[in-house]
Image (tube, rainbow, N blue to C red; front, side):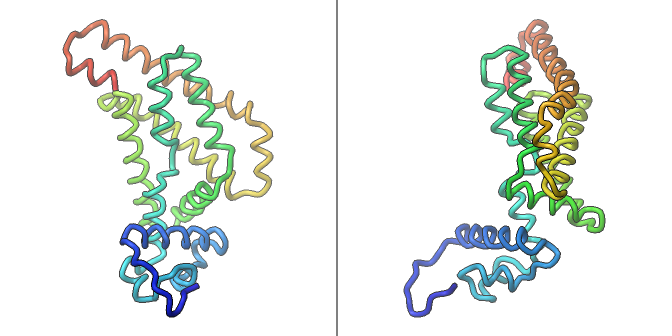
Amino acid sequence: MKEEGIHIPRKSSEERKKEIWLAAKEVFLEKGYERTTMEDIIARTSLSKGGMYHYYSRTKDILFDILWSHNETYLEINIHQEILEKKISFQQQMELMLDAIVDKMCRTTPERRLFAIFMSQMVHDAEIQEVFLKLEDYFLRGLCHRLGIEGDPQQQLQLRSISRMINGFTLFQNILPYPELLTSHQEEVRQMIRQQLQVFLQQENRAIKTASTTTTNPAAAKVTAV
């Protein structure tokens, strides 16, 4: 609701955008993306129509910016980085990654529901599909850099495969009814993805050991220590 006759400090451009994103996310989740209009979003903000159109002219562009800001399409890079920095055994490392993956696949959140709505639009919208692929590539490039496997196409492909599996579960878990059907079988989900993750981490550990024993090149050592 907009207050009349009350002086309110002017918000920065970034604050305005965050206000729009929050309002849009609420409406998208309540009404559905396709049924949401710009007027619906404006009504949830302190902006006038002209003020809103200074930032956005389409609901689609707001949705894209929300997804870029959250980057909830994939497992958060910080989760992986925290795991990589721990001085723990291979088995402990794998269990921590499994914890993160199973949580992503099974636990519903508003952000994941919004991403599921976004993914569901890809079939009939080439622009949304293009943004999805950009989000995916951006995340995987960052993760590959942190893992030090930027030059290994096979490991990159395995990471993409794991990411797609997670996204598939995220889609169905946040759209289909009875999400408890999956949450009550988390151990089965865990076992299903364990084999893929185990193969990936074994290859990653072998690559690090090989690099550390076959080269004294400081630049190469820096890559494998990311």
